[in-house]
Length: 214
Image (cartoon, rainbow, N blue to C red; front, side, top):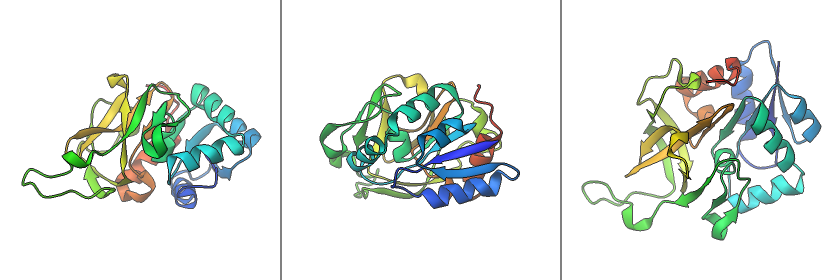
């Protein structure tokens, strides 16, 4: 089996690739910006880190949008961080930046007026560090991961799906927000499984063995 990690020049690409290699013994993991190589893979990972407008520019300039759309429609597909955000229609980052639109909905910035805890202490944006993830509904990629397990985050914007049933995971900072979405063969997370130690590796291991059905 071949797993392709999409290389569009931005993000924590090597860390994602190395983490997958660690859990996918006996399988090939390839980091590639070649649409033909990505299209030929059995499974696809769409990572990302950075500004939405810059990421979308790189995706389009490298001719990757069609292969992202095709792979997201037909094979096990994992989006990570900005790679999850790019699957929505638009983002407030960069002034309402259009994205790929696999999912309906948008990516919103944490509102400054609400960023304080119960004691009134100001919360920092970006939201950075470990936070609990609560599983909104069962999914094969949650197998072996406790509800409320902690994962690692680095983000100033959060997922806001138009269809609430897409949500499979949520967190709180300071209000509840969506951190994982899934539909058919797609699973996408705002957090970084490749930086989340044992729980993150378990999620990636589950992706390696997942057949893309729920």
